[in-house]
Image (cartoon, rainbow, N blue to C red; front, side):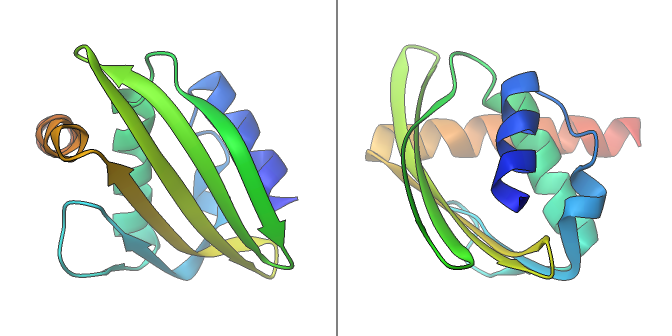
Length: 127
């Protein structure tokens, strides 16, 4: 159920319903920030920014699901750089309790860092 809601949001490039999908104690692990980001507020901010940044031909290409754990491999293009990564999601009580993103290759990590920091800064100035 959690994954169905998440996939629907990603396909629609929408954050509608995201707040309710995140557990209040959700922990977000970014590929470019060294410490875990704890709580619904910061996780919502990162995933909302990602919805804006990862909107050019983003697609999940493989899924491995076992119990309340899922690994979703994704690909997209960002400024002519092919991004390949995985979203590792753990669900609890029909909400995401942990969301970890890993990205490769190094050029992709650097591009994601650049775009995400710019989007988070823009969102902070607007809100």
